[in-house]
Length: 83
Image (cartoon, rainbow, N blue to C red; front, side):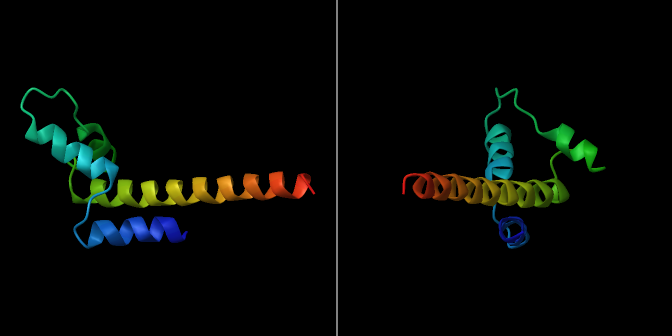
């Protein structure tokens, strides 16, 4: 929850995580075929808009935090098993 909240806050303050950065990079390179417009279409937007950036940032933050917690849990189990 904290990771998702942090991702949401970053997006609301105008920051960009991976999805927003990839969209910005793709739009700045004229020959790029990468488009994230389909994500926006799922959310009822035309293109990768503000809502898309907010939702993907929250999801990225939550996924990142979940992976960190998972890795810490695995490390803890490994240390406990070695005792």
